[in-house]
Image (cartoon, rainbow, N blue to C red; front, side, top):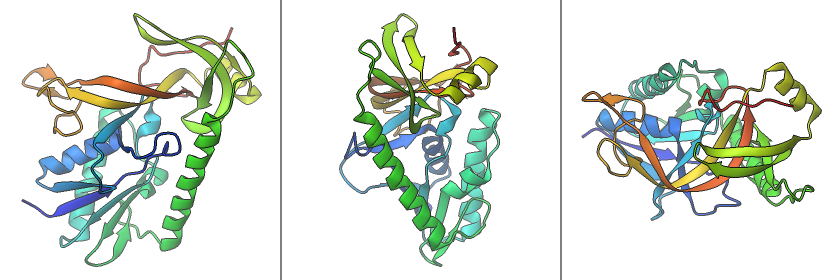
Length: 267
């Protein structure tokens, strides 16, 4: 067995859902990649709270929140290359390339040498890390404020966000039908957002939620604990992550929805 790697996770909705240990799609697939390479993965915060899957049905979920990865003993270049390869596998599957923002949001810390670098082996200063921590706290507080807002429209009680950021751009009415979650009626208050919808720049909807139970269709065990990855094929059977007992958090307008059928239009 190789050295232990510790991953410190961030809960952007801690003000509304405290004491939750949440992992998004990109980070979870990285964890599974490291497990298959023989590493023991320890998840922080170090408590008895079970790890739960935070789903965002849009490309926004790929390492846009800081992820801190700690290890000791091994050479930084070896672990960094392994992590970078794992992240690239995530992007390759979705035909997406990484960016400087994403590169710098994966923070790798060698506890033996005290090196702090990103996934392309560039050093990250303490000042940069402090700035990221302040931004995280600010966003959590802004989400708290958004969640406490009351709709001025009696029939439209669900806030609509933009790209999963703590910014309400409209209000809507949600319902469930045979096809899933549907926004039956809405009003978009932001003029710039309305213009982008009409021009086709903002194309779809994306839902965020916490799956308190998620089951792997291959091994029928807890999806966050097994090493199978949704969308990949095992013995000619495609893996699916079956979400159970999910908590709805928010719905956002997005430029590129993962589900190509989840489109919007303005009448």
